[in-house]
Amino acid sequence: MRHFLTVMIAMGLATLLLLTACGGGVQADVFPEEVEATPTPTPTPTPTPEPEPPSPPPGYAISSLTGLYIREEAAQRRPFAVIYNNETRAMPQAGLMQADIIYEVLAEGAITRVVAIFQDFDAEMIGPVRSTRHYFTYFAQDHGAIMVHHGGSPAGYATIRSQGIPHVDGMRYDGTVFWRYAERRYRGSEHTSFTSTERLMDIAEQLDFDMDVPENFGLFDFYEELTAPQPQNVAEVLRIPFTGSNISIFEYNPEDNLYYKHIFGGPHMDYLTEEQVSVTNVIIQITTMTVIDNEGRRNVQMVGEGRGYLATNGTYSEISWVRDSAGTPTRWYDAEGNPLMVNRGRTWISVINNQPVFEGLDDNEDENDDE
Image 1 (cartoon, one colour):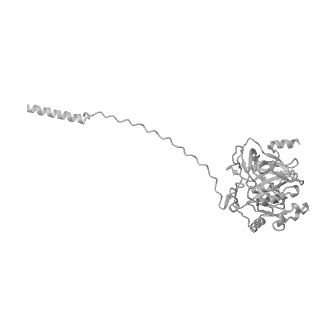
Image 2 (image 1 turned 30 degrees about the vertical axis):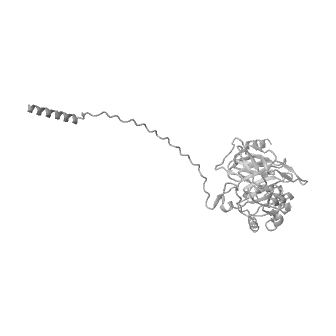
Image 3 (image 1 turned 45 degrees about the vertical axis):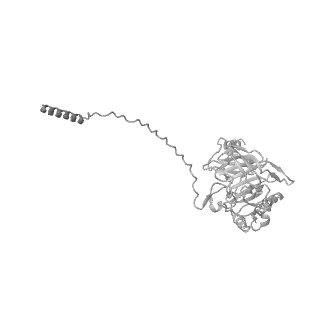
């Protein structure tokens, strides 16, 4: 009996060991907890930064008048506004190709005058310099410029005094700041008055003019790349009528993206460089004009608002202008009412009371073929 029990116990232990070895032990069922899936976050797109314009080379800065690199010293210097004679006996004029912005407007009769704004310039000869009119001062004050003129109308002198505009007058400085160019004496003395960069800088220092540029200097913003604001409007030939007999013409050259000026039936030339006058942008400012005296002098409405056109890169677009007072600069806007942007380079501003004509080069060639 005892032997039987011993055998039974041994068999039970062997069975238990066999079940354990085979993993057949009795275990409680285990169910894993449900875990919510974590959503994959959507990456936030990184905005592409706008490219910054390249930094000027050492010693240079970007001109507020042209958007081009100029000497840093010149970029901080107050500009000069020189009144040019602009009739046939004054041609060719000296120094215009160094001006940054050039205005053209009627004086008396069919004669226009040019007001050239110089900042970074080194011209040995500038002129012929002529007398000012009261509305020429608006162009100088657009840039806080020092006016350079030889004489002036009564209203011109009165406006200079009332507005406190610094100026250099050839009537006072003839023979010092200004000289008479003997080779043109046969044209009449009014066509012989010239000056230079060096002489203007010297007199500005002697008269202790403030030579710092004014705050908020510059009329325009500039495109980073050559742009045609409204490319559907072709403007490869511009005809700008000051009067029926005085029409300025600009022809666009797509090879260098410049407008070349014609006057009196021929190219408008610079005496110093022997180059045809050319600019990147042509602005036409439309306003009202009235004759105010027996001499045929005019009043040109420069305070208020009006419309105009910008021609650049072979195209034109409608623009507008606003000026609040004589002492504040003109503000320019594009067709959508945004501050006007122009292409980098020199700008010609024609002030007229007529409608300009815009044509394509092909149109102009067809006209010439018919003649």
